[in-house]
Image (cartoon, rainbow, N blue to C red; front, side, top):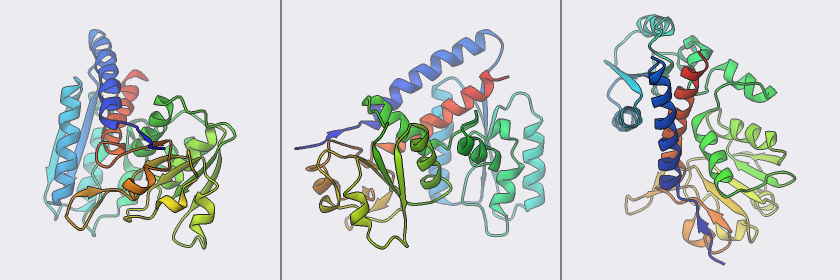
Length: 281
């Protein structure tokens, strides 16, 4: 068996075409979805991420406002700027690129964003809405994973899903989303004593810990679906995920590559959330 690859680039293009169409419909009513992106400091990776997010907005017809601030920006000044964006009717989504400089409390910044504009889905109100099944914004990376499962018409009802990782950004919300679709969910993490025993039971595995080869072929049940959220570098400096792709590809039924898998979906779901924020007005 050789797994079919779930092409994140192709699926992203399809979803972005839908975003463009819905954005055009909103513009016809005099509403242009707007996303404010705030970058503090000179983190090279953050600069790349922000540039990609702004370009994606422009390509889909959304309005994007990029604000760059020096490393020594005070927490008070950042919170004040967020509050002014909360009140700006032309801005429907606010994204503060993480990580922030150490003197700024990231959680305080996240909580300062209006839940109505929390298109990253990190606000405690968004987390609560996801937990209780209420309408709200879903974090973009796990939301993208759900869209990938949807694209292969995978029915999660009664399936056993194992999530490797318990972060607030991916692991925990991923588990909640899978649970909403009636999967039986196991969350594993650094203190899990026998990860292999868990993953061998899984119909779906989501690897999201940022550690190379955390999932190898001998840990995967034949025919399982494997979603690789990891972003690492191999010994040659090439981009790779958390999954031993070459080995697992021979066992799984579907697998996401790195690059070209979950990554493109993350930015796409940010566009979807921003559009939906504008549509709710």
